[in-house]
Amino acid sequence: MAAPALIINGIALPQRARLEYRQTFERVNGGRSARRMANGALFTMSHWQRWATTISGGGWIPPALLGLQPGIPFEVHAVAPLSLLPGESLPEGWLSRSDCPELTIVDSRGVEVRLVYPVLTVATLDGPRYVVGGSKPSWELVCEEV
Figure: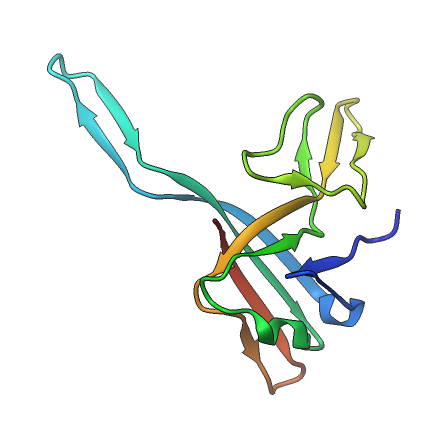
């Protein structure tokens, strides 16, 4: 299977913009607090939870990133797959790519794993970051799910 295209805000970035490509996914908690009931039992209150993703690459800064406005939602078609077990669903609000089907593999222990390329609707707080100079240009985009 060929590497899927990295699509940000409807624009497919060329392969030369994905040198040293990295993408991370992490949970962002919007306030959690621990409370005690009258009998002393501890319970946790969570106000909201979302996902954040950081995408970075080097070698060439794609002009498509210049048009991203902070706070305006856009779609990111992930190139880094998520590993899910058969029957496990994607987190709420995420879509599976229709143009790049899921891939099911069996690891060395005989466990089936689904590799899913999600589509996220996100917004960036600061816009893309660029590093120009040194041995090569690079870029980074930090986004949160909307």
